[in-house]
Image 1 (tube, rainbow, N blue to C red):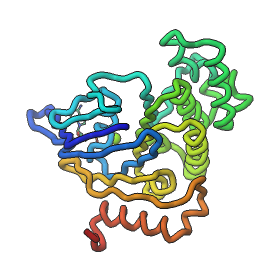
Image 2 (image 1 turned 45 degrees about the vertical axis):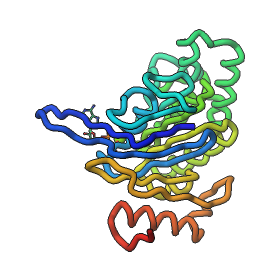
Image 3 (image 1 turned 90 degrees about the horizontal axis):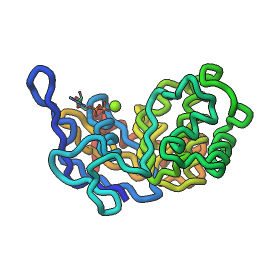
Length: 255
Ligand SMILES: Nc1ncnc2c1ncn2[C@@H]1O[C@H](COP(=O)(O)OP(=O)(O)O)[C@@H](O)[C@H]1O
Ligand SMILES: [Mg+2]
């Protein structure tokens, strides 16, 4: 379990000022839970992910993984960014197994696992292709497979579908859910899309900027497996409205 308790982080700016990226953030994410984070630019979403990854330390408060304080990048945590960041000189299969070769675990079983992930991501037959031969959406799927090949216990995704067109986003969302259901792990998924957050997550954390705080936590009570048909449901509208009201300040809020 990931647990942030009253975490704060302030950065120094180049002009000698300070920016409070996170203030009094308390969040917990269960071992098999899928949590989405939404909020305006600058509200500390990336800082929060980087903190969970062990790349940024809190100034105040505590971050623990399974009860242990995180002080450095931990094995078992994978990060997927907005741009696919594949190595252009390696084919698809080698890009996927690259993290394993770094840690000397690039054994035949691992390679088979990489191929199985690529099949699950709809990339069977593309194993020997080079990244430049694939569309942006396919490259991002390869990057997600690369994240999953290490069997992470925690998958951190920072606007991973942000650069993709709407149809590819939808396709990728469903592919991600399938992969997550087959490989249970804690997922923290940062997105600008309210509908994407509601469709994917068990809980949506809404953040507000300056300082970055948790403004609302919305439990999404939609059955799994999820599908885009659920966008027509009352629960989908209830959650989306709560989130929108919190981000844009409209409507009234029940306490
Ligand atoms: N390394 C850093 N140095 C200085 N300021 C930073 C640094 N990282 C983030 N910030 C600032 O902290 C705030 C939150 O940033 P970030 O976590 O990237 O927000 P988001 O991902 O929600 O857009 C922003 O004002 C940003 O400029
Ligand atoms: Mg960000």
